Length: 573
Image 1 (cartoon, one colour):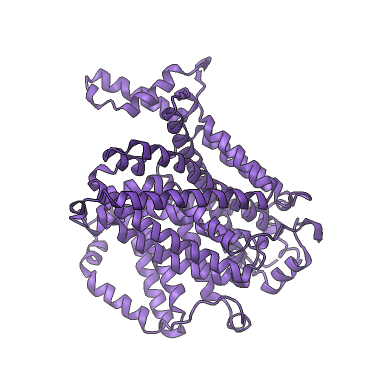
Image 2 (cartoon, one colour):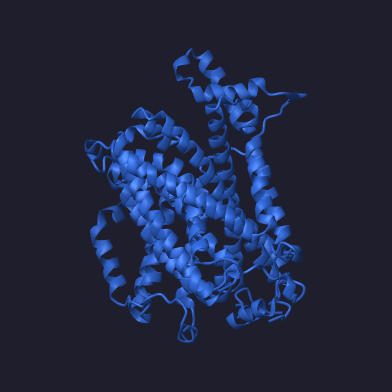
């Protein structure tokens, strides 16, 4: 028996299945279709809901600390990178108006194995991202309650490991007589360990607010897309109003001297914030998972993606300028930078309003992500790569119910106990990998498909024949000294391993330069592929290693279950 790991799912069959009402992996039941209720405004609001969240209320502070006022450049670079990818997503979404996001697109362009890899990758991206957002929401919520003199015991608001480490750290500092290094945050975390009830030697410590918000959001997603849409639109309108108010009010407290120097730590300092800034943008691809719930996906999905990206980029740039103008960038390494800067100028009441907005904004991000992941599982199940239960559609609510419940459990349980260091890096590398494959997938679409796509969104064709080779040569000439250092034979493994992603980027760039010259590739997908892969190189060897381990686990599942149960393997297509 010949193995065919790169068998492709025909576009014609994908569209025919949806027209026929194929939905639950077992039967063609027209009553089991998803509700088609989303319009351009709803999709735009969902994109804004996913992007304007924890990034604008927390990670923007860390990025500003490293990059100074020049962090605005990073927002522009990231927006352009995401813009290239958004155009590629939009073209795929226009031609393949099916749930599943990059997974479905990869199945049609690269074949089954790559589709499985990207589907598995997206599961990591959404799950870890959701866990991080749930824990972030818990912190905002408990801080908000403190402002109203409602005190939740610390052992009910954090993970076990943080409490244990803080308790141990304080003991070490006390023994070494270094009491000045004991911070308020350390004391708060240690108090959870000291005051928590115990079951024998086991301390009962868990993040209960994180569990409760995941349960509430999962229920909302479970009962229907209409309810999700209404909740999303309401939250987005509220938080956009607050963000605009913050920008206008903060503008009156800007001290232009704080913008000098604009790049205090150089371009390298700006790029240190890449994971935090990119983490803020990753949500726009979740819109593509709702294709089957759009009234006119081929027209509305591209518009929703692009509109939301433009709006969010403008807001992020303005917020970054206001933050770095109100206080010195060195003071912005805090968890709640927006509330912090208004406290510094004496507007403490505004900080309470911002805390409320942060709770709402973070909940809306969780809502969109919790909606997106079950639909990816649903699509993989339809194709036989996951058990059939994952594609079951509820007869009343018209949502993928089993997938939604599993998603809630997968996010809620770890959110109770996990300590999520470097989670933004791991989420970002998974998202960037998805973007790379989507951009590459557009380049692989057959010409006859492009010619038959009249009336659908198409990326403007710009011939990269000379542009990409020239850019590659200019890059080699401009950065020849760093390149010489990169290939230095005197480096030990500890130094060399961090350079491995850059070697891959140079190899990819050279390959695309040759293909652009010989194959007349479309410029925008090539630029999207290169820019996303470059951002991946900035995330370091450790995150690449963790990412590859996760993909390795996925390959074990694929070869042990998915390959033989695939509908393509059973000749269903």
